[in-house]
Amino acid sequence: MKREFIVARIEASQDGSPYVYVTFSDPKDYKPDRPMSAFGQNTMAFSSIEDMMKNMPKVMASMPGIFGGGVTDTPVMKISMKEYQDMGIKVGDKVSIEVQKIETSGI
Image 1: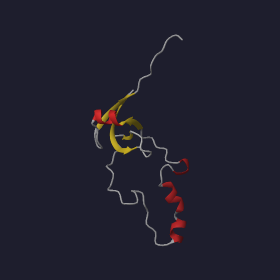
Image 2 (image 1 turned 180 degrees about the horizontal axis):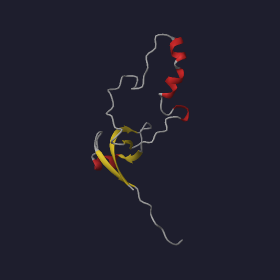
Image 3 (image 1 turned 60 degrees about the vertical axis):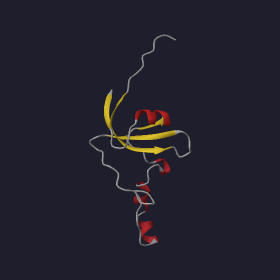
Image 4 (image 1 turned 135 degrees about the vertical axis):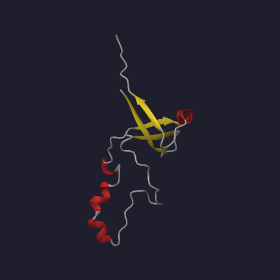
């Protein structure tokens, strides 16, 4: 199976290890990220605590990864810094990913 994707996001590893996470997006669904605010792109503004509490379900749904949420259908690959530098990819690049089943015989 071979599919084309757009490089949607490249993030450094949070724990300081020498890896980057590359997120891919379907070319039909790709929208370049809007500029992020200091508090993240999914931040919501509230005028009062009551307003925030009333909208808490919406707030929780917009925070990927919290409480086991954030499952998406966009592939994310963890690659070493060397592999990343060798590939020379950047956000917005079109790439293809190929998945092949390796046939093994005998054991």
